[in-house]
Image (cartoon, rainbow, N blue to C red; front, side, top):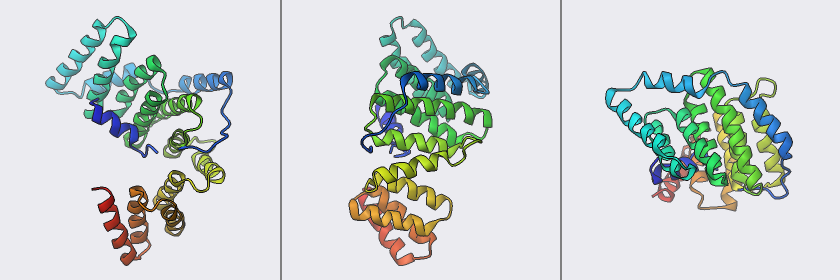
Length: 262
């Protein structure tokens, strides 16, 4: 990806959404077992995904991908592979395949093992969850998004963004045995950090999706008192007010949203 694309993907879902203190993290041995369980349950693999995706490419697109793969194959040291991995991730993202883009972002994270690279990986996989219509692809991306955000959390348990993004991954593709898991994580975060604007905005966004406009407005108005110039809050308020039929407030919030995003 270009530097700008990495910034956009890293802050998307923002989807890239700061942290309650005293967060209890999963012991490393248990986390490792959970990661193995999640990945072993995948109903597809990257080889199958690449084969299928390449069949849909034009001759020029296929040529560009092949050139980047050859560049990667020529790189011997792990450090030399990072730029080809970034280029392949960006290429597949531009081609509309965030699942494969996430895979290459994951290769970078496994080399660098930084909070930022794991967050990029998880966010890219989360975009895959949102966009993919195939259940097996959604499941592939969900398991890997969860693992990526858990890795980011283990590196920096004091950054709430990783916790929120983990919750969103569960929310966009809930586990069958615990469909409320993502919401429950967010509500727990809200209890521990009731004045955190990021959590309030995220809960409000989900409330708008489910038609709970009054609840969304309540949270967003609270967020607005805490951080008056937060553009996400203003834009979400415009949506919530409009959906709730309050067009005067909706127009005012929409204008504030526009000004704050200039």
